[in-house]
Image (cartoon, rainbow, N blue to C red; front, side, top):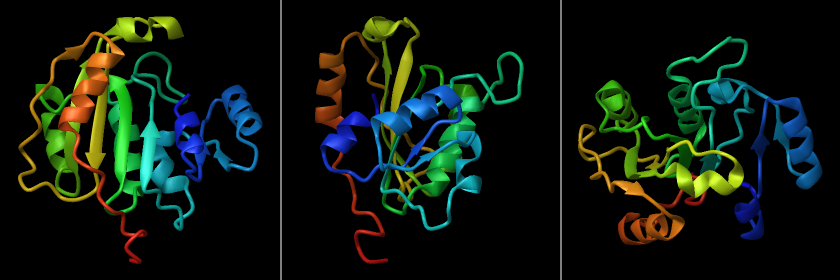
Length: 190
């Protein structure tokens, strides 16, 4: 679902999915688009050095980790960091994670400060699990958007919007609070 809108808008897609059946499905749905099959927690290590996307849209596992039984704390943050490292300077990362992966949570504050040394968190909001009920889950999630340009103050984050109870509320917050996407280094001829 995350790849359909960028494709409709004319974006060149480069997909990644490590689960074999879902990767095969992506290859069938998006013929001609590369589908890598890496554990995205190391996507920066495994991807071709020439690949520097201007936009990454991701929904990493919240706590499931390849070759690890049970829950693995920090899984989503490892995925986020690796994708952010791969992002073109000036690019934008859009992530759907568990609601607890917030810069305002004590356990993740330092990680987000470190990200803001080279990036700027421009939007974050929790999303009620009811929004995803039609897709078979009631887990509360979070939408986080980070631009790859250093923050003026790495310890300063946008105010928390609260919990969006429906997509209309979330879209209104995005429209009111999300700054325009900056130009990527590749768009500027760097």
